[in-house]
Image (cartoon, rainbow, N blue to C red; front, top):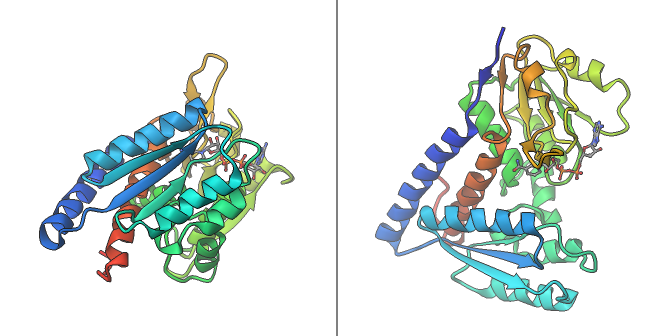
Length: 290
Ligand code: NAD
């Protein structure tokens, strides 16, 4: 059996077009243009690429997008002052501070400072806490994208066993919370670097989500025939090629459905950032969520 390949790029394009329509409607009917501010500290090439992608996608969807680039030697208080200023800026609906920050800066206090109403990257612990207790809040963009991919692919989560490989605050942990909430109702196992018999654990899954940042970690023998495999991993191989955590060539022969890298979760992450910014703009003006 060969797996169905889930086209995250095409899905992201659909989502972005829908968002562009809603942004235009908000502008025409209410005179509101949602605004996103991205803060980049230093010159990390990958971060520059990510912030550039988010900026272009925002503009293409009709959002107001600003990039605030600070020198690599910016101090903690200077960065925090900028975030405080963006919190007060009425034209800014969403704030994102691109990670990783240079080593001398502590991301924790910066994330805690982002106004919850503007926390479109959902990394403020307050936002994570609301998610944990099941209160409405922003969903962090990559896990949100994974949920949208699964819904679009018609993968039933309720009652399914999902194994998430990786427990980071960015991907694995929030995704595990989202999937166990009432309404999604999955049974979730979070595997990590100390998990015993990872292969055996993965073989029990209806859905495997790989988010470990390890090339080739998930191989065909770890996947139950017909299972869905979502590859969040974004790694560079020795040739500089973008690859995931899943041995795609092998797993595609066993799985029922699979996301590729590139063209799977990555494009959806950007689309969900736009979605969150649109939702922030609506919520800040007391408009109902769509
Ligand atoms: P992280 O390094 O913070 O966390 C990795 C997690 O994987 C840890 O919890 C660790 O315990 C686990 N892990 C590592 N090696 C393991 C192993 N051998 N077996 C089992 N578990 C193992 O990484 P992160 O920020 O969560 O990112 C994970 C991957 O997802 C990276 O490749 C990253 O680039 C990618 N990513 C992609 C997107 C996207 O938009 N596509 C967004 C965020 C992260």
